[in-house]
Image: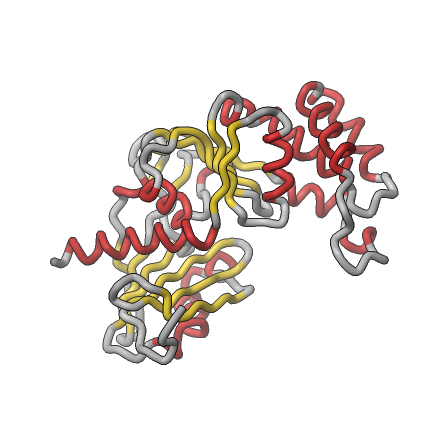
Length: 293
């Protein structure tokens, strides 16, 4: 980042369940400054998003009508998988605001016609991977409170799945039950891989194994993490088996997914969440500029 006192030429914003991040950008696409907030747009009412957004980017609104490109805006009907399936080609949409210091444009969402995948998150990230890696064929794995698997082929999203693996871990092993450890305890890799393999190859036994894994005295809960991820991999087998998997470093659990998949001889790649999300927002901004050129 450089020249942080300069007025940004445009602003990139991404919002998800974990909060919101924003980048002040110069005209050449370089980052002038970056900020984060624990409160994301997805956590507020549709009619209150502008207040939350302004609280984050107000110091940057120096120019007249600074363009703001946002991913994860609530209340937007997603492009349905099976119709508009190319995230990099989806046009961004103008959004009315009450503040004339900026113009707001939103990336369209992506989701299924029905079911838990009806409204996916990480739109900017998926767009960034599709735009930056057009030859990628495989699955994107985005570990989060609800881990997201997105199957993509030559820039087209073919299928998406959601799993509440991290949320289940929080329910089965609340933070209060893991006290006495000042930092994250070391993971017993052998126990973890054994639990992944057992749950993956005998998913019908997973409920029983969860019962014993939950009461394991191991502060790192390696067995519980392994059973939960193994259950997920069993359900998502069609997405990763024999295919490339792009794991996004969106969570402390990202490395666990990488270890689990590598242990099953999957072709694992990794990417940086911030880098790819910003790439998706940059791509959207360039598309906007070309539209009005």
